[in-house]
Every structure is written in C-alpha cells, then in structure tokens.
Length: 193
Image 1 (cartoon, rainbow, N blue to C red):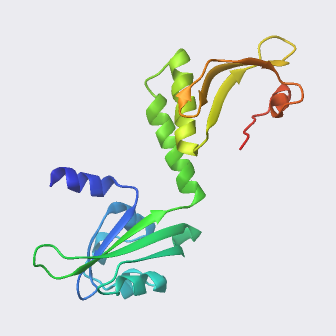
Image 2: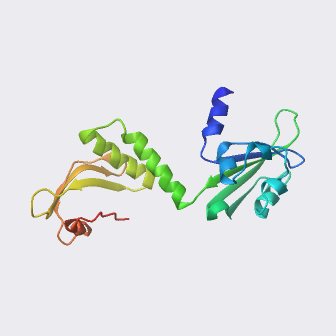
Image 3: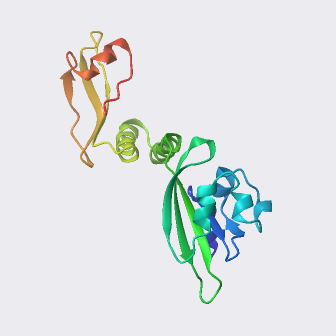
C-alpha cells in the first residue's frame, strides 16, 4: 500500500475517484493542480468540483460503462480523459477518471525530465551518448546525432554521438555544404524532423 500511495501521488496523470452519489472521494496531486483544487473539494459533487467542465461532469455520471473523451481542459490543455467504473470487493461502485495531459508543453516538460535524468551522472563521451539516446526516446526520433564543426572553415561536421534505429552507430564526418546542416556555419541550431 505504501508504494501504491507514492505511485499515485507522484504520477503525472491526474486521477479523481467519485462515489455512487457522484461525490469526489479521492484525487491525486496532479488532478488537484490541473483543476486548481485543494483537498477541501473532497465530498463535493462533480458538478461543483468540475464546474465549467460539463463534458467531464457527464463522463463522471455514466454508470455501467467505461468511456473516454478528448477535451480542451484547464489552461487550454488538450486532455485525454478515461472513465472507468470500478467496484472493490463488495463496496459501492465508483467512477475513476484519469486525465492524460496531451499538450505540447507537457510533452516538452516530460522530454526534458527524461533527458536530465538520463544524462545527469554522465560526463564526456558518455554524456553525449546518453543525450542522443534520451533525445531519441523522448522525441520519438529514429536518428539523433550531436556534432561539432572542427577547424576554422566550419565546412565539415564530426559527430560526437550518433543514435540510429534504437542503437548507437559509429561516428561520422561529412561535408555540410548543400545539406540542412549548412545552417550551422551561421551558428544556428539545426533540428530536422
């Protein structure tokens, strides 16, 4: 139970649990933050707790049916809401709502968190290898490399770490003239998607 409480408390998805009279009986910190609520909301009905979010209120009232909804929620965030009827060993039925934030800001925040966690202990070559792998995983990119432009002409790029198709590849050196990486000569960052 301790691990479960910690997991629910720290999960990024919001979670609300409503009882058979549609009163909020539990919510994790992510849901409270998403809807700008405090624990004083416990015991209130969905109509009160989710005031201004009528599609979610309706979802919370559905009995004997699991549902889902894409909703532009608080602060114009795109939220995927799932509703599931649950019943724990003879207890009254409850409606569990889970809120998955699909907004760009949340994805970037998640990507940055993964990158920092994956690279924080590494230095030198290991840092760059961890970084390209983390960028690939967090951004869903097949190819990621980090390179440098050696020499004063800045016409070659030499990769410091190269991730390709779920594995590390040998580092490469190539001329950048006529490639998208040519913008690097002007000291610009290049991201190709």
